[in-house]
Length: 481
Ligand SMILES: Cc1ncc(COP(=O)(O)O)c(C=O)c1O
Image 1 (cartoon, protein in one colour):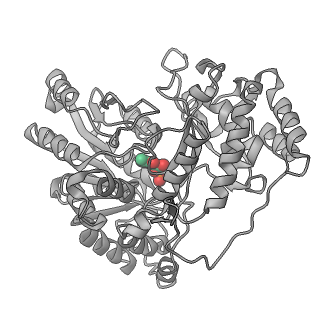
Image 2 (cartoon, rainbow, N blue to C red):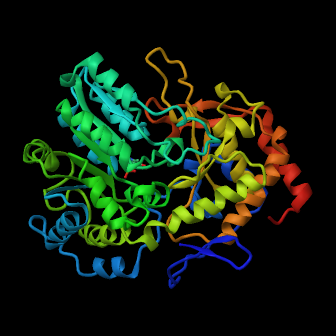
Image 3 (cartoon, rainbow, N blue to C red):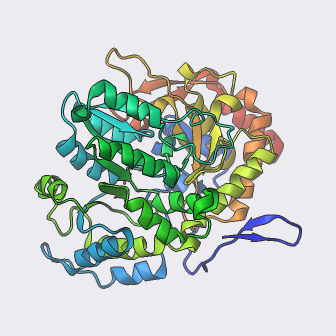
């Protein structure tokens, strides 16, 4: 929640008490240099022991509530017909309004099932923006992904409150070009992860639905960050300022033929699901669940996580929960902007993002600007960001790099885990890095997997810049931090 202080400032205030803590340490810069070198300058390959503030992702890393933990204690481990599943199905029905629920082990498993059933070779899949696993699954099934975002979506210093909106004219044009029968579905991602966690408006979602429905094309909602998108609608869309996050969420769901989600984000667990009210879609998806995930009432999730997900879905539409990371991210982004750090604006739903091309204009995209920036942030702070740029794109069929639309370092803010002082520390180190940015150079691959290379690829710094950056850092701060 945001609270107004007497000097006029907005403070992101925690609407919870911290009752269990996990000790963390700040490895000194020399240790960070050793760690990132061993990790091939890829922050995915770092070990937790070498990380001070883990901002890699908000996926499965959120603090769970006391009620979620309590629910885990009463889970039903039955292979088939477990009561835990029925609690999840009740939560989906009551909070999201869907009759049929298919649990699966995480978001990409839902994407795999959707690809299996809906995407045939030569099909077109339309969406406001892709996510890495989404694109991989739909392309592996033989589909082509089209991102039909509006004119501001890729502007990193925008004030457009709904950069996740889908461009309605482009939608009509693509339907006319390919014909509705060739379009698997239109996918709307609630807060577009790869372009800064940017939301779409309910007005836009309704318009997308109307066009899709008129052409008999299903709308699929990726609801992984649904509560944040609903919270932004409440904050930014005039017509909904007096509507609760819970009611906005229900209204959004009314526009979707199929919902899928990674439960690891808004719902603060480790799981996923697909839900629908349309029997024929449910019947088409259901046979594949036991093949790829597990029986219908667990779908690859542990029964404990199913219980926690049932509670998490009910809790995520509470405004205090829906706002918990969004408000801290807004503070984070505003503090970065004050220090002239090129943060993506407006603030989004899962992270503070830094535009690496504006931060490191001397590092060409072919040398992985965001990858270099991400490793550099770790080196100077012990905070672990994630690269969201060209390294996150796989090569094309000819083996050429596909330059990403944006080169971002993503500093995720897991829900209810970090505090204002952690954010202030990270902003301070980013400001130092910005002053010393000329020391940072590019990267080159030394080991490169063929698919989703960003997870396990290894790189090395050009001109050994990592060691030089650490020398400069130690000269200013000493060897201890
Ligand atoms: C928008 C979106 N969709 C799908 C996924 C994939 O979910 P998972 O990581 O649970 O497989 C993610 C994960 O970050 C995501 O952000």
